Length: 402
Image 1 (cartoon, rainbow, N blue to C red):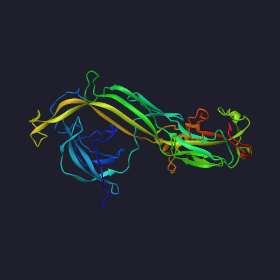
Image 2 (image 1 turned 135 degrees about the vertical axis):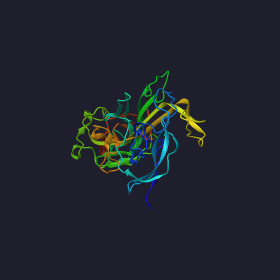
Image 3 (image 1 turned 45 degrees about the vertical axis):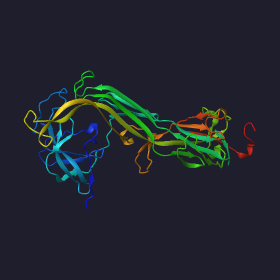
Image 4 (image 1 turned 60 degrees about the horizontal axis):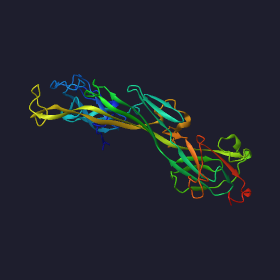
Protein backbone atom coordinates (compact mmCIF):
# COMPACT_ATOMS: atom_id res chain seq x y z
CA UNK A 1 0.00 0.00 0.00
CA UNK A 2 1.32 3.42 -0.89
CA UNK A 3 2.42 5.56 2.01
CA UNK A 4 0.30 8.66 1.47
CA UNK A 5 0.06 11.61 3.79
CA UNK A 6 -2.41 14.48 3.60
CA UNK A 7 -1.29 18.02 2.89
CA UNK A 8 -3.53 20.97 3.72
CA UNK A 9 -2.26 23.83 1.60
CA UNK A 10 -4.54 26.75 2.24
CA UNK A 11 -3.47 28.90 5.14
CA UNK A 12 -0.07 27.21 5.51
CA UNK A 13 1.96 28.92 2.80
CA UNK A 14 4.44 31.42 4.19
CA UNK A 15 3.78 35.04 3.27
CA UNK A 16 7.13 35.20 1.48
CA UNK A 17 6.52 32.02 -0.56
CA UNK A 18 3.08 32.72 -2.05
CA UNK A 19 2.85 31.09 -5.48
CA UNK A 20 1.84 32.95 -8.62
CA UNK A 21 -0.92 30.62 -9.76
CA UNK A 22 -1.87 30.53 -13.44
CA UNK A 23 -4.84 29.28 -15.42
CA UNK A 24 -4.82 25.50 -15.71
CA UNK A 25 -3.82 24.32 -19.19
CA UNK A 26 -1.92 21.08 -18.49
CA UNK A 27 -0.96 18.68 -15.70
CA UNK A 28 0.97 20.45 -12.91
CA UNK A 29 4.41 19.71 -11.50
CA UNK A 30 4.51 19.86 -7.72
CA UNK A 31 7.31 20.69 -5.28
CA UNK A 32 7.67 20.68 -1.52
CA UNK A 33 7.79 23.89 0.51
CA UNK A 34 9.75 24.43 3.75
CA UNK A 35 6.55 24.58 5.79
CA UNK A 36 5.58 21.05 4.73
CA UNK A 37 3.06 22.10 2.10
CA UNK A 38 3.25 21.37 -1.62
CA UNK A 39 2.84 23.87 -4.46
CA UNK A 40 1.87 22.83 -7.97
CA UNK A 41 2.76 24.91 -11.02
CA UNK A 42 1.04 24.54 -14.36
CA UNK A 43 1.46 25.95 -17.83
CA UNK A 44 -0.98 28.41 -19.42
CA UNK A 45 -2.04 32.03 -19.30
CA UNK A 46 -1.94 34.31 -16.28
CA UNK A 47 -4.96 36.38 -17.27
CA UNK A 48 -6.91 35.44 -14.14
CA UNK A 49 -9.03 32.77 -15.85
CA UNK A 50 -11.92 33.04 -18.28
CA UNK A 51 -14.04 34.86 -15.67
CA UNK A 52 -12.47 38.32 -15.33
CA UNK A 53 -14.89 39.30 -12.55
CA UNK A 54 -17.39 42.09 -12.15
CA UNK A 55 -15.00 44.97 -12.81
CA UNK A 56 -15.15 46.34 -9.28
CA UNK A 57 -11.93 48.34 -8.82
CA UNK A 58 -12.30 49.17 -5.13
CA UNK A 59 -9.19 48.68 -3.02
CA UNK A 60 -6.81 50.71 -5.20
CA UNK A 61 -6.25 48.02 -7.84
CA UNK A 62 -4.28 45.69 -5.58
CA UNK A 63 -6.14 42.83 -7.21
CA UNK A 64 -8.74 42.42 -9.94
CA UNK A 65 -11.87 40.84 -8.45
CA UNK A 66 -12.56 37.53 -10.11
CA UNK A 67 -11.34 33.96 -10.08
CA UNK A 68 -8.47 31.82 -11.33
CA UNK A 69 -7.88 28.08 -11.37
CA UNK A 70 -5.27 26.30 -9.25
CA UNK A 71 -4.47 22.71 -8.29
CA UNK A 72 -4.71 21.80 -4.59
CA UNK A 73 -2.64 18.77 -3.53
CA UNK A 74 -4.47 16.23 -1.37
CA UNK A 75 -1.92 13.39 -1.14
CA UNK A 76 1.71 12.65 -1.91
CA UNK A 77 3.52 9.34 -2.35
CA UNK A 78 7.21 10.03 -1.60
CA UNK A 79 8.37 6.61 -2.86
CA UNK A 80 6.85 7.08 -6.31
CA UNK A 81 7.24 10.87 -6.46
CA UNK A 82 3.61 11.45 -7.49
CA UNK A 83 0.74 13.54 -6.14
CA UNK A 84 -3.02 13.57 -6.31
CA UNK A 85 -4.73 16.94 -6.65
CA UNK A 86 -8.00 18.56 -7.61
CA UNK A 87 -8.56 21.72 -9.69
CA UNK A 88 -10.39 24.56 -7.97
CA UNK A 89 -11.52 28.09 -8.73
CA UNK A 90 -9.92 30.51 -6.26
CA UNK A 91 -10.84 34.12 -5.55
CA UNK A 92 -8.20 36.53 -6.87
CA UNK A 93 -8.27 38.78 -3.78
CA UNK A 94 -8.85 36.46 -0.84
CA UNK A 95 -7.23 33.24 -2.07
CA UNK A 96 -10.29 31.28 -0.89
CA UNK A 97 -11.69 28.38 -2.89
CA UNK A 98 -14.98 29.38 -4.54
CA UNK A 99 -15.91 26.11 -6.22
CA UNK A 100 -14.46 22.94 -7.66
CA UNK A 101 -12.91 23.11 -11.11
CA UNK A 102 -13.31 19.47 -12.05
CA UNK A 103 -12.53 15.91 -11.05
CA UNK A 104 -9.54 14.69 -9.04
CA UNK A 105 -6.32 14.28 -11.03
CA UNK A 106 -4.06 11.39 -10.00
CA UNK A 107 -0.43 10.45 -10.63
CA UNK A 108 0.97 13.96 -11.05
CA UNK A 109 4.79 14.27 -11.01
CA UNK A 110 6.08 15.71 -7.71
CA UNK A 111 9.60 16.76 -6.82
CA UNK A 112 10.49 15.09 -3.48
CA UNK A 113 13.35 17.50 -2.79
CA UNK A 114 12.48 20.30 -0.39
CA UNK A 115 14.17 23.69 -0.85
CA UNK A 116 16.36 25.14 1.88
CA UNK A 117 14.56 26.38 5.00
CA UNK A 118 13.26 29.92 4.64
CA UNK A 119 13.15 32.84 7.02
CA UNK A 120 12.57 36.58 6.61
CA UNK A 121 16.25 37.49 7.11
CA UNK A 122 18.36 38.39 4.08
CA UNK A 123 21.36 39.43 6.17
CA UNK A 124 22.67 38.23 9.53
CA UNK A 125 25.19 39.73 11.91
CA UNK A 126 26.28 37.13 14.44
CA UNK A 127 28.70 37.06 17.34
CA UNK A 128 29.15 35.54 20.77
CA UNK A 129 26.85 38.22 22.23
CA UNK A 130 23.84 37.78 19.97
CA UNK A 131 22.38 37.58 16.47
CA UNK A 132 20.84 40.33 14.32
CA UNK A 133 18.42 39.60 11.47
CA UNK A 134 17.89 42.28 8.80
CA UNK A 135 15.21 42.42 6.09
CA UNK A 136 16.13 44.98 3.44
CA UNK A 137 12.71 44.95 1.75
CA UNK A 138 10.96 46.20 4.88
CA UNK A 139 14.03 48.08 6.17
CA UNK A 140 13.74 46.49 9.61
CA UNK A 141 16.07 44.52 11.82
CA UNK A 142 15.73 42.57 15.04
CA UNK A 143 18.51 41.62 17.43
CA UNK A 144 18.45 39.02 20.18
CA UNK A 145 21.18 38.70 22.79
CA UNK A 146 22.15 35.47 24.48
CA UNK A 147 20.54 35.37 27.94
CA UNK A 148 22.46 34.74 31.13
CA UNK A 149 22.67 31.13 32.23
CA UNK A 150 23.37 30.54 35.91
CA UNK A 151 25.80 28.12 37.51
CA UNK A 152 25.44 28.05 41.31
CA UNK A 153 28.44 26.78 43.34
CA UNK A 154 29.48 26.21 46.97
CA UNK A 155 32.15 26.71 48.27
CA UNK A 156 33.48 29.22 45.75
CA UNK A 157 35.89 30.53 44.49
CA UNK A 158 37.86 27.97 46.49
CA UNK A 159 37.00 24.54 47.81
CA UNK A 160 38.87 21.65 49.42
CA UNK A 161 40.08 18.29 48.21
CA UNK A 162 37.36 15.65 48.87
CA UNK A 163 35.05 18.25 50.35
CA UNK A 164 31.31 17.88 49.43
CA UNK A 165 31.06 20.65 46.83
CA UNK A 166 27.65 21.74 45.56
CA UNK A 167 26.93 22.54 41.91
CA UNK A 168 23.59 23.49 40.32
CA UNK A 169 22.15 24.73 37.06
CA UNK A 170 20.42 27.79 38.49
CA UNK A 171 18.37 28.64 35.42
CA UNK A 172 18.42 29.09 31.64
CA UNK A 173 16.07 31.87 30.61
CA UNK A 174 14.96 32.78 27.09
CA UNK A 175 15.51 36.15 25.46
CA UNK A 176 13.80 38.04 22.65
CA UNK A 177 14.39 41.10 20.52
CA UNK A 178 12.23 42.71 17.87
CA UNK A 179 11.93 45.44 15.27
CA UNK A 180 9.03 46.70 13.24
CA UNK A 181 7.38 49.02 10.77
CA UNK A 182 4.20 51.01 11.28
CA UNK A 183 2.95 50.89 7.67
CA UNK A 184 3.85 49.29 4.33
CA UNK A 185 1.92 50.48 1.29
CA UNK A 186 1.86 47.27 -0.71
CA UNK A 187 -1.58 48.10 -2.10
CA UNK A 188 -0.84 51.74 -2.88
CA UNK A 189 -2.72 53.26 0.04
CA UNK A 190 -1.81 55.22 3.15
CA UNK A 191 -2.61 54.99 6.88
CA UNK A 192 -5.48 57.45 6.36
CA UNK A 193 -6.77 55.76 3.20
CA UNK A 194 -5.66 52.10 3.11
CA UNK A 195 -5.95 49.93 0.02
CA UNK A 196 -6.31 46.17 -0.22
CA UNK A 197 -2.91 44.59 0.30
CA UNK A 198 -1.48 47.27 2.59
CA UNK A 199 0.24 46.17 5.82
CA UNK A 200 0.36 47.83 9.20
CA UNK A 201 1.94 47.10 12.59
CA UNK A 202 4.61 44.81 11.15
CA UNK A 203 6.67 43.19 13.92
CA UNK A 204 9.63 40.83 13.52
CA UNK A 205 10.72 39.04 16.70
CA UNK A 206 13.73 36.79 17.33
CA UNK A 207 13.76 34.47 20.33
CA UNK A 208 16.48 32.27 21.80
CA UNK A 209 15.15 29.29 23.80
CA UNK A 210 17.10 26.66 25.71
CA UNK A 211 17.42 23.39 23.78
CA UNK A 212 19.02 21.10 26.34
CA UNK A 213 20.85 20.91 29.67
CA UNK A 214 23.85 22.96 30.72
CA UNK A 215 27.18 21.33 29.80
CA UNK A 216 30.01 21.72 32.32
CA UNK A 217 33.60 20.55 31.87
CA UNK A 218 35.96 20.66 34.85
CA UNK A 219 39.50 19.24 35.15
CA UNK A 220 39.57 15.95 37.09
CA UNK A 221 35.77 16.11 37.45
CA UNK A 222 34.91 15.48 33.81
CA UNK A 223 31.84 16.38 31.76
CA UNK A 224 28.59 17.14 33.57
CA UNK A 225 25.11 17.65 32.11
CA UNK A 226 23.03 19.72 34.50
CA UNK A 227 19.25 20.10 33.98
CA UNK A 228 17.67 23.42 34.84
CA UNK A 229 16.90 23.38 38.58
CA UNK A 230 16.18 27.07 38.97
CA UNK A 231 17.40 29.21 41.84
CA UNK A 232 15.59 27.07 44.42
CA UNK A 233 16.33 23.56 43.20
CA UNK A 234 18.59 21.00 44.87
CA UNK A 235 22.27 21.00 43.83
CA UNK A 236 24.37 17.98 42.98
CA UNK A 237 27.53 17.08 44.90
CA UNK A 238 31.01 16.66 43.44
CA UNK A 239 34.44 16.10 45.03
CA UNK A 240 37.82 17.27 43.81
CA UNK A 241 40.54 14.64 44.27
CA UNK A 242 43.59 16.83 43.62
CA UNK A 243 44.43 20.41 44.59
CA UNK A 244 44.86 23.08 41.95
CA UNK A 245 48.59 23.11 41.27
CA UNK A 246 50.70 23.86 38.20
CA UNK A 247 51.88 20.24 38.18
CA UNK A 248 48.32 19.07 37.41
CA UNK A 249 47.44 21.76 34.88
CA UNK A 250 46.38 24.68 37.08
CA UNK A 251 48.74 27.18 35.51
CA UNK A 252 46.74 30.40 35.95
CA UNK A 253 47.22 32.47 39.10
CA UNK A 254 44.23 34.07 40.82
CA UNK A 255 45.91 37.47 40.84
CA UNK A 256 45.81 37.60 37.03
CA UNK A 257 42.03 37.16 36.89
CA UNK A 258 39.69 40.08 37.46
CA UNK A 259 37.21 39.34 40.23
CA UNK A 260 39.23 36.79 42.21
CA UNK A 261 40.60 39.24 44.74
CA UNK A 262 39.16 37.10 47.57
CA UNK A 263 41.93 34.57 46.85
CA UNK A 264 45.65 35.02 47.44
CA UNK A 265 47.11 36.35 44.21
CA UNK A 266 49.66 33.51 44.00
CA UNK A 267 47.21 30.62 44.31
CA UNK A 268 46.83 28.62 41.06
CA UNK A 269 43.32 27.88 39.81
CA UNK A 270 41.78 25.27 37.56
CA UNK A 271 40.08 26.44 34.36
CA UNK A 272 36.86 24.76 33.25
CA UNK A 273 34.01 25.66 30.94
CA UNK A 274 30.21 25.96 31.04
CA UNK A 275 27.69 26.59 28.28
CA UNK A 276 24.18 25.65 27.15
CA UNK A 277 22.60 25.02 23.71
CA UNK A 278 19.90 27.35 22.46
CA UNK A 279 17.71 27.39 19.37
CA UNK A 280 16.78 30.52 17.43
CA UNK A 281 13.18 31.20 16.35
CA UNK A 282 11.59 33.99 14.33
CA UNK A 283 8.03 35.26 14.32
CA UNK A 284 6.40 37.81 12.02
CA UNK A 285 3.07 39.46 12.83
CA UNK A 286 1.26 42.08 10.75
CA UNK A 287 -2.21 43.24 9.75
CA UNK A 288 -3.23 43.22 6.07
CA UNK A 289 -6.07 45.31 4.65
CA UNK A 290 -8.36 42.71 3.13
CA UNK A 291 -11.50 42.69 1.03
CA UNK A 292 -14.38 40.69 2.49
CA UNK A 293 -16.42 38.83 -0.11
CA UNK A 294 -19.81 37.26 0.25
CA UNK A 295 -22.34 35.55 -1.93
CA UNK A 296 -25.07 37.98 -3.00
CA UNK A 297 -28.21 37.07 -4.97
CA UNK A 298 -28.30 37.38 -8.74
CA UNK A 299 -25.70 37.30 -11.50
CA UNK A 300 -22.52 39.39 -11.71
CA UNK A 301 -21.97 42.08 -14.33
CA UNK A 302 -21.13 39.42 -16.89
CA UNK A 303 -24.39 37.64 -16.22
CA UNK A 304 -22.70 34.68 -14.57
CA UNK A 305 -23.46 32.85 -11.32
CA UNK A 306 -20.71 31.31 -9.20
CA UNK A 307 -22.11 30.60 -5.72
CA UNK A 308 -25.16 29.47 -3.75
CA UNK A 309 -25.92 26.67 -6.19
CA UNK A 310 -26.01 28.94 -9.18
CA UNK A 311 -28.31 31.61 -7.74
CA UNK A 312 -25.75 34.26 -6.74
CA UNK A 313 -22.33 35.73 -7.32
CA UNK A 314 -19.35 36.65 -5.14
CA UNK A 315 -18.90 40.35 -4.44
CA UNK A 316 -16.79 42.56 -2.15
CA UNK A 317 -19.09 43.69 0.67
CA UNK A 318 -16.64 45.18 3.19
CA UNK A 319 -12.98 45.62 4.19
CA UNK A 320 -11.07 44.82 7.37
CA UNK A 321 -7.58 44.70 8.90
CA UNK A 322 -6.88 40.99 9.14
CA UNK A 323 -4.09 39.65 11.34
CA UNK A 324 -1.51 37.54 9.54
CA UNK A 325 1.88 36.12 10.34
CA UNK A 326 4.30 33.28 10.19
CA UNK A 327 7.06 31.77 12.28
CA UNK A 328 9.79 29.19 12.20
CA UNK A 329 13.27 28.21 13.30
CA UNK A 330 16.55 29.64 12.00
CA UNK A 331 19.21 26.91 11.91
CA UNK A 332 22.90 27.77 12.23
CA UNK A 333 23.39 26.93 8.54
CA UNK A 334 21.29 29.97 7.63
CA UNK A 335 23.48 32.40 9.56
CA UNK A 336 26.45 33.64 7.55
CA UNK A 337 29.85 33.99 9.28
CA UNK A 338 28.63 32.36 12.48
CA UNK A 339 31.63 31.96 14.85
CA UNK A 340 32.64 28.37 15.49
CA UNK A 341 32.42 29.03 19.24
CA UNK A 342 28.68 29.56 18.84
CA UNK A 343 27.91 26.46 16.72
CA UNK A 344 26.39 23.58 18.70
CA UNK A 345 25.85 20.01 17.47
CA UNK A 346 23.54 18.64 20.14
CA UNK A 347 22.54 15.45 18.29
CA UNK A 348 26.16 14.59 17.37
CA UNK A 349 25.54 14.10 13.66
CA UNK A 350 28.33 16.43 12.59
CA UNK A 351 25.93 19.26 11.60
CA UNK A 352 25.39 22.24 13.93
CA UNK A 353 21.72 22.40 14.94
CA UNK A 354 21.80 24.91 17.81
CA UNK A 355 23.77 27.83 19.24
CA UNK A 356 26.07 27.77 22.27
CA UNK A 357 25.18 30.30 24.93
CA UNK A 358 28.45 31.18 26.66
CA UNK A 359 26.97 33.96 28.78
CA UNK A 360 27.61 31.98 31.97
CA UNK A 361 27.16 33.73 35.30
CA UNK A 362 28.57 31.93 38.35
CA UNK A 363 26.66 32.57 41.58
CA UNK A 364 27.82 31.62 45.05
CA UNK A 365 25.39 29.68 47.24
CA UNK A 366 25.26 29.61 51.03
CA UNK A 367 24.66 26.48 53.12
CA UNK A 368 20.91 26.77 52.41
CA UNK A 369 21.52 26.71 48.63
CA UNK A 370 20.48 30.35 48.36
CA UNK A 371 22.25 32.77 46.03
CA UNK A 372 20.72 35.81 47.75
CA UNK A 373 22.61 35.66 51.05
CA UNK A 374 23.81 39.14 52.09
CA UNK A 375 26.98 37.53 53.50
CA UNK A 376 27.89 35.03 50.78
CA UNK A 377 26.00 36.25 47.73
CA UNK A 378 28.22 37.24 44.80
CA UNK A 379 28.50 36.55 41.07
CA UNK A 380 31.17 36.31 38.34
CA UNK A 381 31.03 36.09 34.54
CA UNK A 382 34.05 35.26 32.35
CA UNK A 383 32.19 34.37 29.15
CA UNK A 384 31.83 30.66 29.87
CA UNK A 385 35.14 30.08 31.67
CA UNK A 386 35.03 28.64 35.20
CA UNK A 387 38.02 29.45 37.40
CA UNK A 388 38.20 27.44 40.60
CA UNK A 389 40.81 27.03 43.31
CA UNK A 390 41.10 23.70 45.15
CA UNK A 391 43.10 23.59 48.38
CA UNK A 392 44.56 20.71 50.34
CA UNK A 393 41.96 19.46 52.81
CA UNK A 394 44.40 19.32 55.74
CA UNK A 395 44.67 23.08 55.79
CA UNK A 396 41.00 23.64 56.54
CA UNK A 397 40.05 23.52 60.24
CA UNK A 398 36.77 25.40 60.17
CA UNK A 399 34.45 27.76 58.30
CA UNK A 400 34.81 31.54 58.46
CA UNK A 401 33.26 32.77 61.68
CA UNK A 402 33.53 29.41 63.49
